[in-house]
Image 1: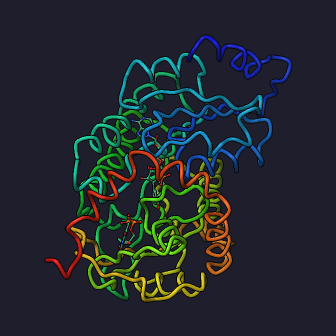
Image 2 (image 1 turned 120 degrees about the horizontal axis):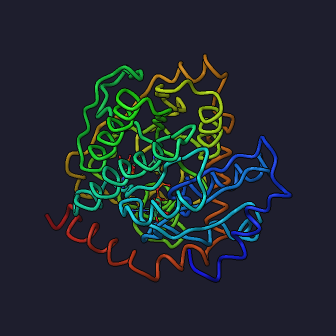
Length: 363
Ligand code: NAD
Ligand code: TYD
């Protein structure tokens, strides 16, 4: 932490404001899409909790996502790398958290295909370093935010429970599966109190524009081609980020240590149908759709059975897909500054690299 942030730290630990139920929560990757939504959710729901946002601010980290809470005395941002022991040691020594909710990751499949190494550093080594310091500091609960991708591709009419074997098919998914196994080891070998949450594809405000739904909304808004990989028949299950945040809250407070929870929305869409639906909702022409060369190792379908979290905690998605999507489209329309900031930086180099030479007509 920098010197000029000392004042915030002091307010953060004001002993006159402390009470027994107040928890200190270390959120890693809190400047990203789901992490920033989760911090906002947590601050609103538990105004006495103290939240440390520990984030390296990679291309995907954006403190503008948290502009409305940055002055909150119970919130502190600490810049740091989960894969750097020194950074992690410092943040644990300074704040001694009760809970760790670990979102920080390299999260995009297409980038992992281009450069897997950083995915192993952050997603695997970073998780182990956090686990080591969590053990040393007797953290009461460590939650890993994992993904349905660890199960690999699932045949039509089937869905997997938490017992299914892991069969990742791309570097991102493999690195997440490895992290899941390290959580298991922390519990089995060291008795650490842990949970894993495996959610399906999230959508909603503040999602980095490289992901499917924001790419389609942005391109439609700008009358650009909408690149659909392969034949567009691949299937994903879509959950609004707030429904995911509610599930994390329940698991954090009620999950039995060592348990894994699938968080699916039962809202499966073929990619092409979803793009058509988005275009229709935006009153844009379907002629903008452009089929492009498929992703390497592209998983056909993800589908989880989420009965466990439903039966144990009564969780179910609360946001209708149609409403959540309309809200998301509206959000991107009304946050052009947020999006343009990203489009003016490194992102366009990435976009060009991933989408150039992908046009099927030129293959
Ligand atoms: P994101 O890419 O939007 O954000 C990732 C955040 O992690 C960024 O703020 C980034 O700066 C930070 N980060 C990256 N490397 C770091 C490092 N070495 N040290 C500290 N911070 C670092 O990702 P997201 O979509 O919000 O996903 C968050 C988590 O949820 C990830 O673990 C991802 O695997 C998981 N997940 C995402 C989805 C989804 O649909 N987006 C679905 C299931 C699970
Ligand atoms: P993505 O948002 O990258 O999530 P994931 O691959 O982790 O599920 O992609 C969702 C689906 O959309 C996936 O099947 C790949 C496809 N896709 C496209 O067809 N075009 C695109 O430009 C992108 C980014 C994804």
